[in-house]
Image (cartoon, rainbow, N blue to C red; front, side, top):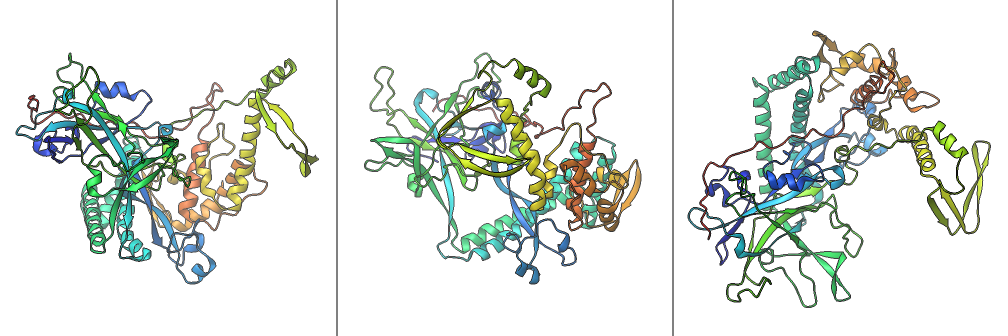
Amino acid sequence: MVNAANWMLVGPWYRWPQPGLPAAGRQSAPALQKFSGDDFIPGFMAKPQHSLKYDPAVDVVNNLDLVKLDKAKWGRMLMILNNKGEPASNQDRLDDKLFKGRLALSSLRKLYQPTHDRHYLVTCELHCDAPGFPRVGRDQVCQAGFVVRRRTSINPQAVPLDQIKAEAAKVHALEAELFELHTLAQAGAQAAAGSDMALNVQARQLKLAQDQGLGSWGALVQRQQMQLDQARLDLADWYQAHGISVKVEGWFPLMANGRPSTTFGEWRALDEAQQVGETWQGDGQSSEHTYPMFALVPDPREPHHDAAGRTMYYGIVPTTSLQHDALGQARFDDQVTFEVRCFVRRHEPCLGRVGKQPDCHGALTWSRPTESFRVAAPFDVLGSANRPITIKLPDLRELAAQAAMRPKGRLSPVRMVQPQHLSPQIDGNALAGGSMGGEAICSFSIPLITLVALFVLNLFLPIVVFVFQLWFLLVFRFCIPPQITAGAGLDAALSVTPPGVDLDADFTVKVSGVDTLVKAVDLAKHLVDGTGAIEKRVQDDTGMDTAPTLNALDNNTLGGIDQSLMDNAALKPKADGSLPPPPPVGEPLVYEDPVTPVWTLAGAKA
């Protein structure tokens, strides 16, 4: 990006392919850096490089890949889909067009929300396009900021959607296979060295490589990644051949009472000139919404600071907003793809500066767009697990004692004003009807509301999983002390089975150092009919009157529930009667490795 000022706004030097080398930085884009903790700004200013590493499986958007079901097995699947990824109908079953879903890694970055304890900065630095790639002094810049733009696909040749999905499915299949490899690698990294789980992961990795005619696990992962990269290039060529391209749009606040609204706005398409020109503004219209960037000024007492001798800027990337369009659609929707583009504006050299007032009328310099990304949904399972929440319910004995000395009206601070009072009628322990009265004001205590809410959750959880056959939801629930006991028989083999093993096929694992062959038929019989059968354990865990019928589920579904129940049963109270710690949640914090410049930057100003 070279303009009349010969300025270039590029990514930070420590994210260049060759750190600090001008030739590697000239075409770089601003970086999106990830952090944890609400106080991440001071840590970044002290050590700009010290940001979290992106996980190849967690920090990307996962697509749903469809796998054709074997007719002999589809009757035991938990959720059967058709070729469109929708729940299969009776006609789909007759036509034998049945599939199951599996996760597939994509190349699209996913940014989590602040409620997920993840925060992001966009970072860049300013140079002059001259020999030596010298920095531009901060005193020459009067404004720095960035915009968030939306990317949408356009299909001028009206290529059928089914055809587009079919081409994309080729990539999704390879992405799903790579996802399974990453899952297996993660299981090995988390297993204790020398344990049965670690040995099983290593054996599984070697077998997968040998099945593909390769001698090592690393060679298998490398080949899979190369095949996926080539498939993505082929898909991009196919898009270009069929005229499918991307439209870039900017967010423009709507005008309200002569001023830009802070609540409502709209996306407007930007052509290539508008994307790198002045922020577009029509007659009576607001300009594109921008966010500020701040200069990263290093401590002069630290000559080896990452920003020493450089002109660097950073800005907080928004991943949530209260802004909506006129139809009520959220600006940052989790199904929309975004990008960030940074800019700086120089002082107008002809106008000069009056007092302390900046003359922000000079030329703009734009960066290249950052990598594309989507925003995680508010209740994303992986994201929400990063910020554990503990809700302490009241001790009923203490609550009863407090009720005995309750000052009138003092302990019920939640007031609900009802224009119409809805009064249920109870006959014994059943609902017999209800009536609607006039205006009423009711006050409740917070402990009372919390107790009833938890009771309702426990009451309806078994009903929901039973009615809709969503038994996998039990994996997301743990109780200490548990209501169940561990199973027997093949549970020891299941407990050391690494993720990614197909439980519908025979497999071998090491239990206490001894090879154990687990047959799919025996596993299914054990899980449903064996000693400590899963049906009885699910009944005990959910409090159902009768045991559910789970023999229609496949081994992979049953195995996941069984392993979750075993983890639950292992959480026994300690010898002193205290409760054990809950299972770990979220992802471990892994930071980027620090780098040093391979070339010393010339300190001259442009």
